[in-house]
Length: 306
Image 1 (cartoon, rainbow, N blue to C red):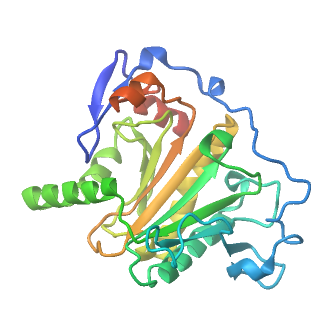
Image 2 (image 1 turned 30 degrees about the vertical axis):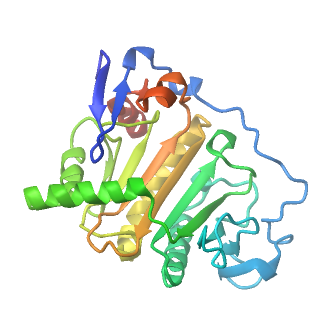
């Protein structure tokens, strides 16, 4: 385990994280006091849902397992050329009191497959270049309500950081004749940062983790995005995701997760990122752009393996 501070460079970009294990807190000291809104009448529950807003669902009528609905306060719309795109909400379960971590593997697979179905629908919209799927869990991660849900953000604009990562990957591949993500999977599937591995996916704490207990899940096969995963690979993804989220649930740590598809990038490599929000970005992070992480990735991986 790391016993002194060190700078670590991002896999792709020219940015750094300062790992400071001597300042680390125990996992139980990072938990959040939950303050997301509790609504007496939740409009994500089956009996209250506005079915006029439903775009897609798994299950019939009010007996659904998961449902996609319009975002009624979208930042992007297809009739706005200055902020062109679309947004949706995925309600992950009809059960108001069950977070994603406590859902069965089959239900987590259902949620992932509904995301895939909606990505395929959204990317067909004219001039959509980028689709982001994400979840905010806990008030410090940006969640505004309790009922378990995630969101989809489809944009005509490809974010500059994503384009920068794509360019870095292409430069590496041209120079080394191999995909950098495939190399990362090989390297991180063994050793101290490994969390979970099977024949389909690899989960690990990234070398230059920006956040306490950050975890990545990557396809072991060179597949561009989640829409290319087989049913067995989706099953493995669900298994790894549940393992990670259960550990975060055990210490009540808020988190974001996200994955994306760039519609014109056929040679990417699927990455699913889970970024817990136990750390606070303060003066150093905001002033210098260098994140300080007091939980070494090796320690984070050991926590997930326990």
